[in-house]
Image (cartoon, rainbow, N blue to C red; front, top):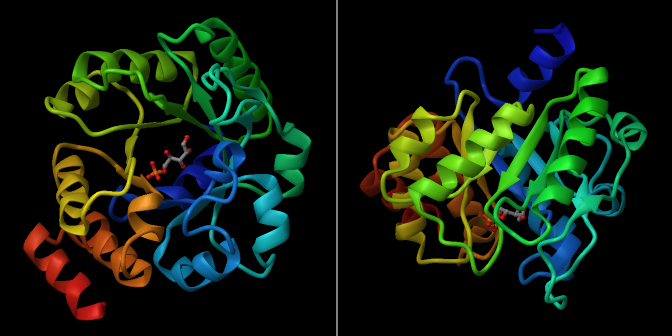
Length: 259
Ligand code: R5P
């Protein structure tokens, strides 16, 4: 692997643990001022010391994040439809590779819509992004399985994750499910899980625990951190599971103590 590519991946997934806590705050690209991110800087800044990387759009990065940080950035480069649009599962490229380089990002992220009406468009645009990003040693994170109507079972998530990896993704983001080992075993690149809609804190910790114990390389979690009763406590509790191998009881105790 090219040095730059390897270095960027190692900045995201810690080589000593093989794990990562990606903090996802890119929701605004299709959800607008998402609850908890209205003033994105106020939410994100205190949590940054506990995140291995930060996933967001170029607008949010420029407007809300200081260039003095050294947290690796994962830049959302797909979009084009919003939650108000019935065809919201139709994304294309919304940020070019030159801007990704200018912003000194560690990776770019693109949503693929496997099984949706516009599957072909998103897969072809995804490979365009990969070709451009690979030219400069920048890894592409595939975001899979976003969408309300999808059945997120092991069969579907394995299929979407494997397609993403075969098309050239260096990291795959998907969802936890029953039989998650099938997803891990059939995907040749590191897999991280999204948190999804806000659920009770203990359940989110349980999901993160099950995912990493089954072989996930970590989480790419947003709402279950920034919409928690105490985001600063939650990010540390999730971190204890991902990076320190805490069990759920210990992590939840930590959450309550810090809260
Ligand atoms: C969705 O496409 C966005 O990339 C989110 O960043 C992702 O779903 C992770 O956030 P959450 O844990 O809130 O689902």
